[in-house]
Image (tube, rainbow, N blue to C red; front, side):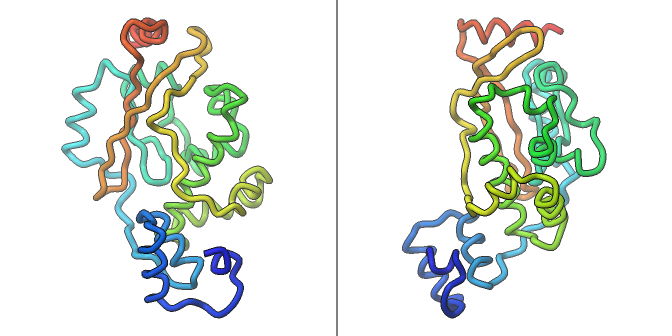
Length: 223
């Protein structure tokens, strides 16, 4: 794998890449990335980013009193509940490249970076870079490629992480800390529901019942 990643030696055959992916038990994102490194195209999975299916819409409608947000595969906010706006800010207000969360993160938008304690910034950056790499691997000449190219020009932080070729970095199911300008720190879980056909993600934010963060979350939902 290291020789393929460093592009040393002859290009491996598709059969060899399949065997290597099976031996390493790679997931879909990791396998796609391996194929790109080996000079083979990954399977194209390019759904419409701006379409939210009726099932997902019904789910979000039932979560109107809970912080929830639907993100495209590129990290664009497609739909937010009012409590999610109160927690995170209005992610749907942006235009151009700023629509994409990864772009706002690596260009230093304080409205995004300020949501997380400084000590959590390194892992957040790795997560965002891995997520855009997943989209880039599926469609390197599309919008994901434009986002990557733009970030490589303006962000040395992104460029340094991008060179690591990390895929599958996530901590969605870990307890994470968020900083709210009025309520202070909240410790929340971000439960994730995937729509595989649209490659969209529904994130629902919850707190441990009875905890201080749970009380703060209830204040947000009452706004």
